[in-house]
Length: 238
Length: 238
DNA sequence: CGACGATCTGACCAAATGGTCAAGTTCGTC
DNA sequence: GACGAACTTGACCATTTGGTCAGATCGTCG
Image 1 (cartoon, rainbow over the protein chains, first blue to last red):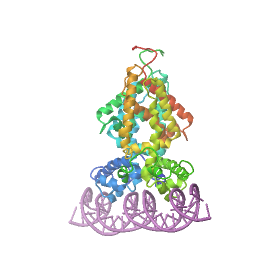
Image 2 (cartoon, rainbow over the protein chains, first blue to last red; image 1 turned 90 degrees about the vertical axis):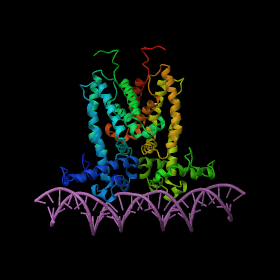
Image 3 (cartoon, helix red, strand yellow; image 1 turned 30 degrees about the vertical axis):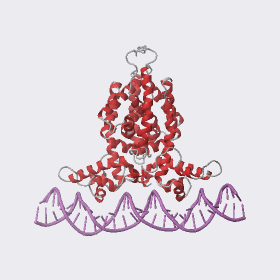
Image 4 (cartoon, helix red, strand yellow; image 1 turned 60 degrees about the vertical axis):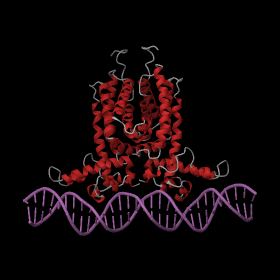
């Protein structure tokens, strides 16, 4: 309930919490306790928010996982929402740059394959980050909607331009670049967000590095075959 | 917190709540009030669970949306968990059969295209159903894990066999059938579960029928091109 | 119509939870 | 080693929320 309302305070800046900036900086010596405790809290929070969602997570639970008393959590992050926001900011930072591999001069097959590999790597190494983000979007993006509508949209629009260039150069089949990006996101994040289902179907107790390699191979083949202009038989020469 | 524990009561049967069965049946006349109220509650619950998740949803909120007093909700569904379970059962029933289009004798391109269209139709018409399910999986499937590990796994294993046959018949490229299914799920459900993000990137206030048509076209083309054996130049004749 | 089960609902309660606070303890610096 | 800032924490509180209950009302069938 309060979530919707909370969403508008504390301008969603990218990096650290505003509080860090106003206090003594962590140059060296000073503030290192803060730095270390914030890190522990952020890590604990990422896990708990991933497992329970925003409403399901309790500050007591997060504090317990970080092995700190609850009051201490509230010393570093005034509210649950502020902590949540910080976790989200981390995730966004994690993903934002991966699309930079898309540049007009590169070979699309290379760029796309790399992107798939990179996103799958994050799904394997930081599944909780992905889950927190998925949960946020799933429930209407009460915190990151502005980010989606400004930054993300711009970024995708930009990269869609690159894809269009690739199409014009005859390197890719004609397709809607934005939907193409959605499909890249969907298939790669699926292995983090729907991990339990994947595990159940594959009959694994845990997803192995091997499983991710299989996923990568299958996705890459599917996407490249589906999106690239068939290279060998150059039916239409430029 | 209680979620994990609640998960084991009330054997997850498919259809109606057990209570319906013990009381007067809804043949006609008798029990029609129950039927109508349960329906309203289920619809309200689907929306609210989709918007807020299990923990974020409140029985008061659901009751309000159904325009019934909270105590009345608890008259029809003893606990929030029971109501949630009923909503989930609806969703599963909705999806389960769509994979039946996969049979060895059919043309894979046709079956796959139909499946994509069907799943996208559900994403458009019942996005909340999809979201409730996604949320459940995202948080570790505390309620439906047994279903995933038994029924769903079997079903996918079964259909994987069909895909393998298609591959053997030279109709499809060699690929891992289970990952192929994951990819179908991922790209189709994305448009329901990540709807806000899709809207933000496309700059839409609402996703139109047109948007879904575009999605369908792009997905179908991508998947068929990627998975089907190239039909015209029959390099390898059977 | 009268009986009886089904349905309805305001009032209530115990537990959980986000957040506060004041009284401490520790840390870095001069 | 002393001083102020940074950090720590048990106790506490207001609010929210799932669930109960007893008494009222309704619907239907004989």
